[in-house]
Image (cartoon, rainbow, N blue to C red; front, top):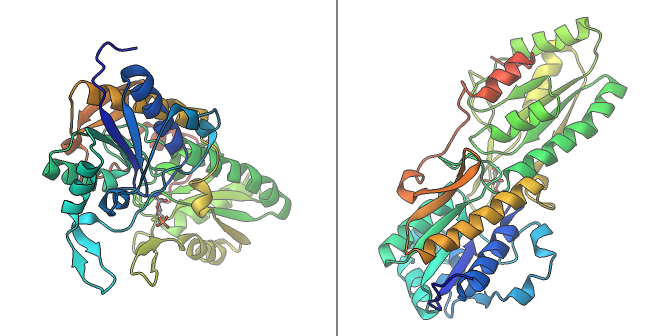
Length: 364
Ligand code: F6P
C-alpha cells in the first residue's frame, strides 16, 4: 500500500480498434489504483463516446469484477470505437460538429481527477488534444496489433496478432505441401509491415511483402523457381494488407459509411504469381481473427506493466505522457513526441536483415 492516499477518482477507456490484452491493462489499472492508492476507478464505455454522452456512460470498476478470467479475455469489457473524432464528429444530418467540449463536460460531470486512455496512434493523438484543451491529467497506453506507435518496441495486442498469423502459417504449410501450391496469407497492419515481417520469419515464409518495400513479381517468381529447383513444390507467402507493387497502388475499398479499408492485395498477388510461374495459388485473408482471441503471455505481461506505470504516473501528478516499452523495461515519454506519426518497419532493421539472411524474398 502506498502512503499517498488522496482518494482520487480516475477514468479508464479503450479507444480505436480492439485487440487482445486490453482487459489485462484495465485489470492492472484497477488493481494498482484501488489496492495501491485507495482510489475509485470508473470505466468509460465506448471510448470518447462514453464521455460525450449525456449522461456519460460508465461503470464503476471494483475488484469484485476482476475474479480471475478478465486477464485472459480478448476484446475490451468497456467497448471501444474507431469512428467519430470528437473534433469532427459526423452528425445524423450529414454535417460535422466539434464535440470536444462535451467530452470535457462528461469528464467534469463524473468528478474525475485523471484519465488513462488505451489507444493506437490515431486515438492517442485525439485523446492528447482533447485532454490538453480541457486541462485533464492524461496518461496514454499504446495498443495496436499494427505495432506502429512510435518510441515503443511493443504495443499491446501485437504479440497475439503475430502468434495468430504464425499459427495460420503452421496450418497452411501442410496443405500447401500436400497440394504443391503457393499459399498466400494476407495479414493486417495498415501502413506498417511489422505483423507480416515477424509472422513471416516465425512461420517459415518463403516470401514476405511489406508496404515499406514495394515489390516486383520477378524476384518472387525467381524465389519460387529456386525452391522448385531445390525439390520443393510448395511455398508460403505472407503479405501485408498495404503491400503494393513498385509500379502500383495499395489496394483499398470503401464501405457505405465512407470508411476506407485495406484488403485485397493477396488475391491480386495470387493471380500475378500464377501468371508468372504457372503455380497453383490459394489466398487466405486472416482479417479480424488477428484482433481477437486470448492474449499471449507477452501481451499480458506488457499490458500489466503499462497499467501499473500509468496509475503511478497519475499518482505522481504527471500528465500528457505515454508509457512505452524500451530495452526490456517500461518507460514513459511526452505524448507530443509520439503522436501524429507512425513507426514503420525500418528497412535496415535487424529483422529485415534476418529475413534476407534466411533467403526469404522481400520482393525487391
Ligand atoms: O489498426 C488495427 C487494424 O486492425 C488494422 O490492421 C486494419 O487495417 C484496421 O484496423 C481494420 O479496421 P476495422 O476494424 O475498422 O475494419
